[in-house]
Length: 91
Image (cartoon, helix red, strand yellow):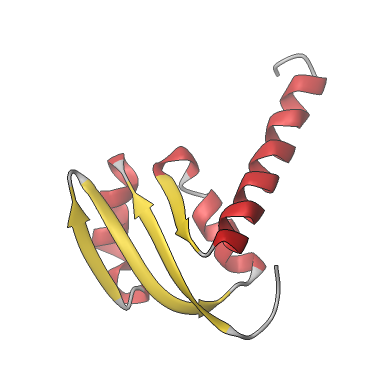
Protein backbone atom coordinates (compact mmCIF):
# COMPACT_ATOMS: atom_id res chain seq x y z
CA UNK A 1 0.00 0.00 0.00
CA UNK A 2 1.73 3.13 -1.15
CA UNK A 3 1.71 5.88 -3.66
CA UNK A 4 0.40 9.32 -4.25
CA UNK A 5 -2.42 8.31 -6.59
CA UNK A 6 -5.72 9.51 -5.19
CA UNK A 7 -8.31 6.79 -4.70
CA UNK A 8 -11.96 6.82 -3.70
CA UNK A 9 -12.12 5.75 -0.04
CA UNK A 10 -15.36 4.55 1.55
CA UNK A 11 -15.44 3.45 5.19
CA UNK A 12 -18.41 2.52 7.36
CA UNK A 13 -18.03 3.51 11.01
CA UNK A 14 -20.31 2.03 13.65
CA UNK A 15 -20.81 2.32 17.39
CA UNK A 16 -18.71 4.87 19.24
CA UNK A 17 -16.48 5.31 16.20
CA UNK A 18 -19.40 6.75 14.22
CA UNK A 19 -19.94 9.41 16.87
CA UNK A 20 -16.21 10.18 17.16
CA UNK A 21 -15.80 10.56 13.41
CA UNK A 22 -18.89 12.78 13.17
CA UNK A 23 -17.71 15.00 16.02
CA UNK A 24 -13.95 15.13 15.58
CA UNK A 25 -13.03 13.95 12.08
CA UNK A 26 -15.85 15.21 9.84
CA UNK A 27 -13.49 17.79 8.35
CA UNK A 28 -11.34 14.95 6.94
CA UNK A 29 -14.26 13.64 4.85
CA UNK A 30 -15.33 14.84 1.44
CA UNK A 31 -18.79 13.60 2.37
CA UNK A 32 -20.51 11.81 5.26
CA UNK A 33 -23.75 9.84 5.11
CA UNK A 34 -25.76 8.33 7.95
CA UNK A 35 -26.80 4.72 7.37
CA UNK A 36 -28.89 2.71 9.85
CA UNK A 37 -26.96 3.69 12.99
CA UNK A 38 -23.65 3.89 11.15
CA UNK A 39 -21.75 6.66 9.43
CA UNK A 40 -20.30 6.25 5.94
CA UNK A 41 -17.15 8.29 5.33
CA UNK A 42 -16.15 9.23 1.77
CA UNK A 43 -12.77 10.70 0.85
CA UNK A 44 -10.52 10.89 -2.17
CA UNK A 45 -7.02 10.28 -0.82
CA UNK A 46 -3.73 8.48 -1.34
CA UNK A 47 -3.40 5.05 0.24
CA UNK A 48 -0.78 5.75 2.88
CA UNK A 49 0.36 3.93 6.04
CA UNK A 50 -1.05 6.84 8.06
CA UNK A 51 -4.51 6.25 6.62
CA UNK A 52 -4.37 2.55 7.48
CA UNK A 53 -3.19 3.30 11.03
CA UNK A 54 -5.97 5.84 11.50
CA UNK A 55 -8.57 3.29 10.42
CA UNK A 56 -7.06 0.55 12.58
CA UNK A 57 -7.32 2.86 15.59
CA UNK A 58 -11.11 2.38 15.43
CA UNK A 59 -10.81 -1.41 15.65
CA UNK A 60 -13.84 -3.42 14.59
CA UNK A 61 -15.96 -0.26 14.39
CA UNK A 62 -14.40 0.74 11.04
CA UNK A 63 -15.05 -1.36 7.93
CA UNK A 64 -13.38 -0.40 4.66
CA UNK A 65 -15.88 -0.71 1.83
CA UNK A 66 -13.49 0.46 -0.90
CA UNK A 67 -10.95 0.32 -2.32
CA UNK A 68 -10.27 -3.39 -2.07
CA UNK A 69 -6.55 -2.76 -1.81
CA UNK A 70 -7.05 -0.80 1.44
CA UNK A 71 -9.48 -3.41 2.81
CA UNK A 72 -6.93 -6.14 2.05
CA UNK A 73 -4.19 -4.19 3.83
CA UNK A 74 -6.38 -3.73 6.91
CA UNK A 75 -7.25 -7.47 6.88
CA UNK A 76 -3.56 -8.37 6.62
CA UNK A 77 -2.61 -6.12 9.52
CA UNK A 78 -5.52 -7.41 11.65
CA UNK A 79 -4.38 -10.98 10.98
CA UNK A 80 -0.84 -10.06 12.05
CA UNK A 81 -2.19 -8.56 15.29
CA UNK A 82 -4.28 -11.68 15.93
CA UNK A 83 -1.30 -13.97 15.33
CA UNK A 84 0.72 -12.13 18.00
CA UNK A 85 -1.83 -13.10 20.61
CA UNK A 86 -2.29 -16.63 19.33
CA UNK A 87 1.45 -17.33 19.54
CA UNK A 88 1.65 -15.94 23.08
CA UNK A 89 -1.27 -17.95 24.33
CA UNK A 90 -3.75 -15.10 24.50
CA UNK A 91 -1.98 -12.45 26.43
